[in-house]
Image (cartoon, rainbow, N blue to C red; front, top):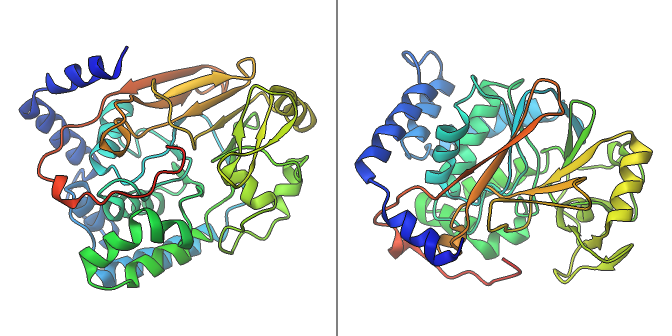
Length: 338
């Protein structure tokens, strides 16, 4: 399907019908009278209203306490729905809950890149974080390459926080929190889930477990590679055109899976026009969950459902949610390999 075809399909969406569906998701996220501050926060965010600065401080403190006890390689049970990059597209995060079901009825693993590029990074990262705190055994988060002080000062999150709060305090609260996010996850002891990919410095999951993750993402080394590397068709390791991480071929993937007793790799990090893409002999899949990325790429988003047995998988594709009145917020960020 061409970008033009996707655009035509997008124009045919009935906004009023979609708003009814959004109301249903909002009701599901906020079922019943708010019982705690956290329920009230989720209620606000599911309507697209950012938290106050004091509320953000409370959320980040609770999230840090929770994440400190999670592993660099966080175990995640099946069934689970895996979500790739969201990139501040709050309307499309709500669309994900429409397509895949709302927490806690559906369990979620988010593979990072909650912020930057989109116009609603604040609302997006706050909602996912609140859901993580509210349902700690049903919602899981790992870190992406955009959960970084340096990157967010270039690609939108920092400027959005200044615009919405008048200071950098909320940006600092969240970028400090990002240091505590797990580096990866393993679903049902068989599916390795980093944000980006593999590293020539990492042979085993135990190597990842020994890393000190509470820091800004380094410019090089194993921690950097987990966030920045990409699969490639060439054999062995290659120099990444991104300027960080590496490219790695199917022989690298096969060796890593065999050594660690794993069945496949699920990762995010790369735009896929159909929302997902298999490579390396169906041993690696990329999931990208930000449809019409940057509000101009014309791609589908997708999520991956892993069934109870940890083996059966289903991909759900979705188009971007209708949005109005936001073009004036756009600030063209530099492109680095969209």
